[in-house]
Length: 156
Image (tube, rainbow, N blue to C red; front, side, top):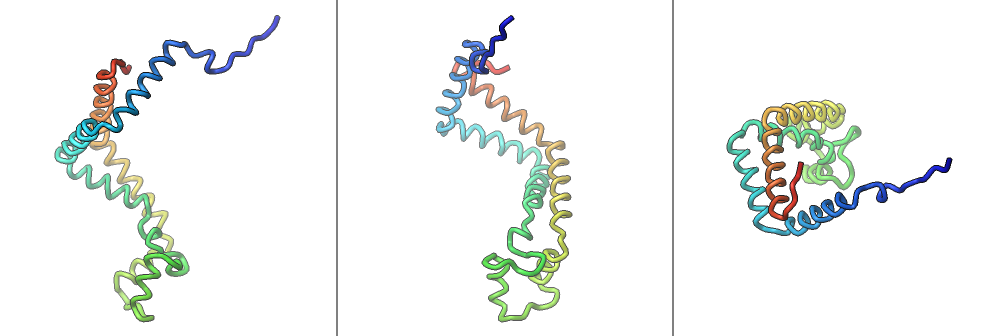
């Protein structure tokens, strides 16, 4: 009994590949369409107006996940050379005032609070997505379905 090996492209129905090609071609041409971007902008704007607190917490959470303290250059052993923190410190003439914003940020950088900030940001982001983000994703998915139907493809 001989075994026949079939490659993945050979095992996919031709009709499916044709529809997939139509969809990707239509989507790519639509991505340059100003009307599509304006529609997407309107969806996001309506969402922000309907859910301002969820949107604000989502943005705050995403910022915290990015760890802005480390991104500014406040490291565990001091300001990272060439960073915003190092440039800021160079304007202070060699002394940093106790209790200043710079001192607080550097203290947090040296205490390795980065993990805590990222964890809190992840929690806030997750709660925000659950609170109102699903609604936005649903609206964007519907916009994608509308766009696909305008080029003659039905998304399931």
